[in-house]
Amino acid sequence: MLLDIHISEKTIGVNKIIDNLNLVINSNGIYGIVGKNGTGKTTLFKCILGIESYSGLNNSFEKMNLRNTCWCPTETYLYEDLTVNEFYRFYDKLMNINLEDERILVFKDIPLDIQIKNLSTGMRKKMFLNALFQKSYKYYILDEPFNGLDLEANFILWNYIKKISGDSLILVSSHILDSLVKNCEAIFVLKNGGGKYFSSNQIKLKISFLNQLRYD
Image (cartoon, rainbow, N blue to C red; front, side, top):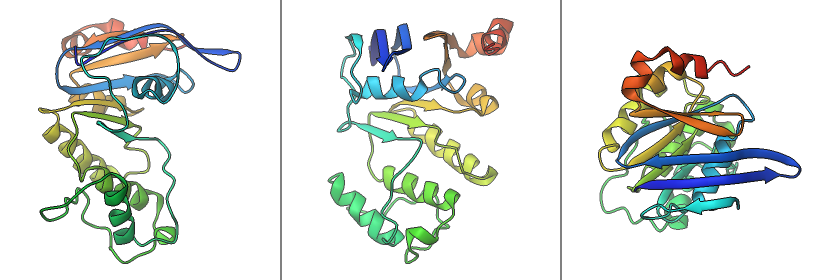
């Protein structure tokens, strides 16, 4: 199993966020994670990565962690006074990335000499994603990677994710359901502390998938 995790319980304070959740993935590809705000998408990702503790078991063949997984959090914290190029070099050093070839720029419209504090929200997101994708990983966990991106940037990012998905397991959370349905092998719906798994065929053919998304 590339990913086999059972979370019997995850609480934050007195609130139970996840309750008896099982997620099993056997092959590479793109897998969507959806749920309304507060259902535990980010918490699930952090449990998978070992950032958050939980009651349960992780029986994955190789456990994901911050060394072997590309982790893109919803919010990024950046050094405002660095230029774009300085940030790229800082991130390379932080992640022990040795560039032998030309830098991979998924988004090519960001000036290298501009300070981060002068970038728009969308440009900051594109810069951060450019830095992340300098290294190839077996696992990618992308938490709302499309937030702040315009339509063209969404298209570019999906194309890149699909390009690398043959050799990697990619988990993507997003509120843009149409894009997930179009591009994912399967979608995992979080609801009431647990979750339900829908294959691509089930997504296309079964009305129960849409019913599951009616959270209230």
